[in-house]
Length: 332
Image 1: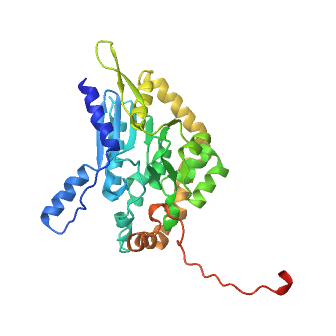
Image 2: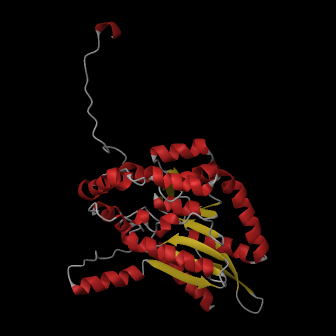
C-alpha cells in the first residue's frame, strides 16, 4: 500500500492550489533559495514501470523558463534510457499543464545571447520520436509550448475544463517545438491552420471531437486500478485527470514491450517520415526563429509592463490607426 500512498501524494500535488512568495536574487540567501527551487521545478516519481514527470512552477501556471525547460529535457532523456520504465506521463502541478514560455524571462533578453531564451534549448530540438510511449495528462492551461508538449506525447487525456491553444500568437512568439508539423498531422491542415493562425483556445470537447485527445474526463474524476502484491488487485479511487492517465499507462504496461514499441514506430514512420519530419521541423526553426527577437521580446515586455494578453485577452495587441470618413450620399 506504500505504492498507493506515494501516488496519492503526487496526485494531490497535481491539483493543489497554493500561493508561493516571489523569489528574489538580491542576496546570497535569495540565490540559494532560487537554486533550490530550480531543483524542484521538475518532479519525477516511479511507480513500477510507469514514470511520472511533473512540471512544478504553479506560481507561474507552469510556464517554462530556461532552467525548467533544460531540466525537463534532461528528465525526458533519463526516462528514455531507464530500462525499468515502460510508459511515461507528463503532467503539471497546481491546476495547469503548462501555460507556455516564461514571458518575464523573454522580456529581459538583451540582444546578446540566444541561449538565455528557453526556445533555443535542448527541449526545442527534440525532433525524434521518444523511445517509449508518453501520455499527457492535461488540465487547466496547455498553451504555446504547453500545447506543443502535449502534441509530442503519443496519447492525451484532458479534463473538460482545460484548454489548448497557441496563445503565443498574441506576443509575436513563433512556434518552434514542432507544433506546426505535428498538429496538422494529427487533425488535418484545415483545422490546424486555424488554431495556428488565430491562436484561439480549443476546449476539451472540441479537441476530443476532432481526434486531438484520446480521453475526455470530467473535472476531478477517475478510477485507477493497480496490481500491487501477491496477485491481489487493489482498487484505488482517486480524483483528477492524472489518475485516468496512470490507469491508461497501466493498461499498456501489461503488453510485450518489443512488439508494442515496434508497432508504435511503424505507425510513426507512416505518419511522419514520408513527409520528411526532420526537414519540416528544421524549416519551422529556420523560417521563424529570428522572429523571437524581432517581435517576441517586445511582446513579452508588453506582457510584463502593460499586462498585454493577460487572462486570455486577445484585443489591443497591435496599434490600429482607423480613420472614419464621411460616406458619399449615394451610398446612404
